[in-house]
Image (tube, rainbow, N blue to C red; front, side):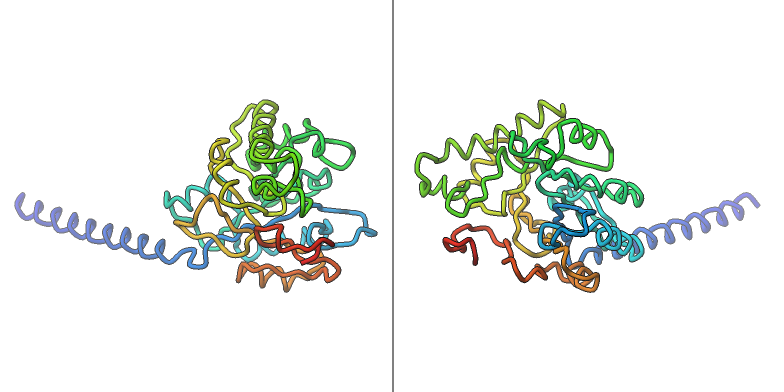
Length: 298
């Protein structure tokens, strides 16, 4: 009788192990199919409530922003933090399908309009700060107190957008290291990267590991200087999605033009492409200021 009972227990145990292996295999197979299109990184700048502001590549109304976030939530999109995103790029883990990253560049004061919306859906996001005097306060940009408060919110991360955000097509980080701007070179470019990191870390008391290039302009020399400065990831304005193994020092992003309708937003999410609806302004996508002529147009 004891022998018969043991056989039954042994049989049940074998069935259990077989089912367990099947479940684990199914999980592995399902994980392998996730994120076949990669992860898009969406760029926002100003989130405005003034109906007189012209909407465009760097300006979106709060109402349109609310519509977009509601759409993300209703369609199962999953905003993730930069930390999760970098772990994914470095092949340190999988992500669920429809993962995306939300960026807010420049540290505009009105970007704080996005905070209650993001909190409503528990959406992580990162804010990219111009840390020198040019990008702090003045009624246009966040004060340090605002940035500190954001940094303490577990949903949000802070990144560098350089010290002064040089954006003149003839006077910027790229032209400096290429020796095409009088009296400026590698030293000045390195200061922009290092001083921004130092100021943010001093004010916030946290590591600042990521940097977004002003206007998306960069070259190989600037990547070297950023690595010397201690950055672990660099964000561009080159379109496309990011997949495991993608270079963390060349992260692709797409602008969300505030003049576009929700149908365009849906298209961008599916195809990770750059769409400009503000016809009065040329897109700033790409990585080089040399594509612009003396009038600042492409």
